[in-house]
Length: 483
Image (cartoon, rainbow, N blue to C red; front, side):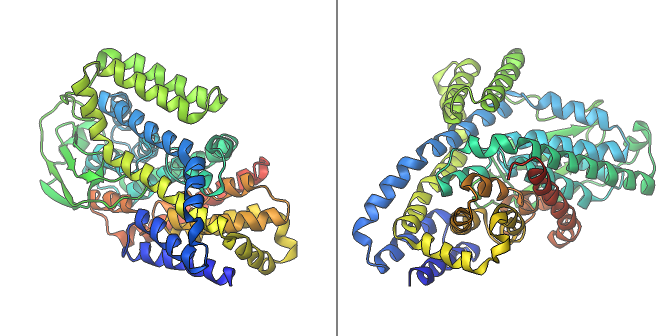
């Protein structure tokens, strides 16, 4: 009976959030609460939730302060020189432009917000693609796949969800996965190079002057825009200015709001990145911010302190040094409050779902059923099975549904065959390169909307390359003995 109720609870949760009848946070709280009462264990619901909240508090803290930290770094201009450098590197060579797209998307993905990544990447690269008449699905496909690999960062969402669902430390999942994820990112760069060579053969290579001589018609691009708010403007040569505005959409999968991107002619003489006149820039503190970020990431990899403590200290230091006046600090925190609330709210709401699933014994009964369905010969390879299943499941499900609904069952099934939950958790990250092009990911609509690409065209082009990248990550994890 518990087996059936467990699967029905998960199915109900998935249907409600996939059909958008309920928000993930509401579904994570209300559905398990109802099923806890249905199995006759309603009196212990409070115990399950309190225990879950205690287990998940470090993960919520890590996500909250990581979002604030990287949001501040974007505000103060840490990534602006990177954007300008990539644009200058690209010149008018299609191969360089595609590779530059992959590099830029990967770097900006450090903030853990897919919407922000796509807004900055498309704003920077769209004028180049339009001017050279390059394929826009190449841009969207490369950007989405690069972001998918980088989305596995502990503050990006999937790793935190896996840690939350299995009650593990996010750093124990992520740090050993770095070699496999590096291979996945390398695969994206190789893919970008190959696609760029193909575009170069199709279009040829122009000089920069020839490229600038191609004046596109002014146009307005409809988009479902989302991100951390504000306006990010890019100016490219005499070519174009792309501005995007929208409402917040965090890594937890909050809905994106409507917006527009306007491309107009300009007479600037050189490449520029994000709006060089925004009031939050701190050019005199650039090297301090770069050093702080490098030190923070190094300390995280070396596990000098728990990740939540590192980002708490980093966010406090970044705010204090860059914005010493209290009104400015409050403004920066408010600018990123939507993302923080969405992510932390999701984590604490998950305490109800995972607490009920575990406390009532549903997950054990469901795992027993899964163990019986898996051929005995495949039992010791449950990590590989999990990795393969993560491709279709994270594409047709939201990350919330997969990590909170399915992963605990796979972990229990693996444990019955001697496979540790850490291996299962690491394997579950393999499908993220494909997940970022899922129709269930709001950020992908920001990407295709700003790039004026039909979602179906993006899907047909991207899926095969994203699957290949995910398989590279999975294979590297097996070869390196990570899973």
